[in-house]
Length: 445
Image (cartoon, rainbow, N blue to C red):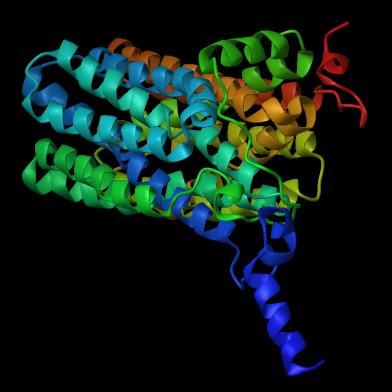
């Protein structure tokens, strides 16, 4: 080829149009999708900082204000319920207004709620700041956020990316739990609340500068796929969200996924994240030691979730879910016997085992949503996540009530273990979707 021809070819490359984006997108060594995924990961860590806090503050708030554990648990349950109920609408709002705008507003709401709680004097204020503001903010950055980013930016490696982004919450737990426990122990609960507010605000510039709503915004194809034009902003986000729910609710897989995921939330966020630390304190364990155990759960949660994403790309998601729920249920049945004033090897084994299983359920659940509900899968998953958080909210509240009534958390551990067994059965009876079927093919006949 002559020098003139080579120069002309380079000029043609510089004039590449969006229609040629698939050819151009193969040139960068690191696809932009991985940068967007990294920003999403950091965002979830910043937004999830608050989730490390409630379990650490139950005893301090009870001591300072005299509020019952049931009252404090009610505020946590409002947060968790709104987290779940906001998620499907957040997915639709991201379609309408873009990912960046929705996430920036959400981070600001989390920061406002955490900061305002520093000046509260009544339990109803706790429910407004923790329940309403933080619940709406964290719900807008829930797993539906991860699903939206994954669906738009990735065609290949979706299971792996889902696992990595799901593990971001555990990474936040790993970072903030020991830090917040130390702050609470040394300086009180108010500085800890300020810390998580600042963590949410620090992430805002990264989102605004580096996040992009769609691969077409930068003239690229999604990773592993072909170039597609950016769709026009969706109108009627709330209407679409409700319509998708009504359509999905006519199908059997939706109720099985929602039911099993409700139990997932009850046995993780509602139970362990909220009540493990106060339960350990009941047995004489120091708050920093109990919080460190939860942080160790976060370490193995990252490993387990990413590995689960890898498995989901290769094996039947229904069988994976059944195994995960069954193993979780067995581990919870043994937990009351492991509680002690000091950390011992049996407790460490539980922490490692439970950590590997913590949110390993997310990649196969999301994969089943994609299989059955196609382009609406992010919103459907948002509704399934809502059930997850409703289950978590119920146990966050009822766990506190059970502690007030029985003086122990044992009955809650046993009940959650039994529920996990029923979730395993639900997963096994989900039907496979025919390859050429539409949503109506999954309808209960």
